[in-house]
Length: 310
View (tube, rainbow, N blue to C red):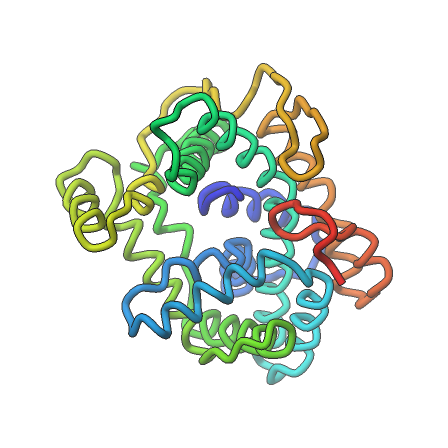
């Protein structure tokens, strides 16, 4: 999957693909862009009891791994049951979740293919697949920020991609809590999502920019407490270059990890593939057209793995 900067920029770009008036005003825009982060913030939950954090982490994994059509329809149903003043914010957030899905399913196989190729040729990376995956994603994040916005994390810190209001947090938490129980059988307090987003924000404020004294301290603490460098692998470096080997701009062949298909797409190609797929998904979602939505989901989960929808 891409990381938070790429998802935010994708959200900014696909906003123009929505019908006029569907997302209006600053609060709805923030809800839409936060929705584009999908369930990823749930994986960052740490400032609570381990049992509560584990529920958040488990829910994030379950959302990403299947039942996509059911989850999207449950999300739409949840928007319809919100109080009238919250309904537009809820719809904007839900449409953002759909954006996260569109980009994840297109780009995740590409990242996994690179991760596996690197681990295959370098024995010392055995057991560090998650860290390698995170490094590739953060590299693509920094590249796309420069390529599309000609900025670095100095001008646009990662944590600023999580701007929100109290209502956005409350509404998003209520929607995800309903989907969690109705689709995945996970009981989670509606306030946990807001807390997870705050933890996600704290993490990125601690670890960036890469190389600072604060970031090095966070890395040492993580290794001492958790024995891993995963959070550190997510940090972004300051990039002022259009070159990025991880983006495959020369279109070298790579093998889809779930289908075996040999492809030559670059990261830019996959970004555009997701952008072009989004309007159709959004239309089917807004209309509540289950048959059309299921056809467009095409059995793929957030990771781009086939045969996981039902």
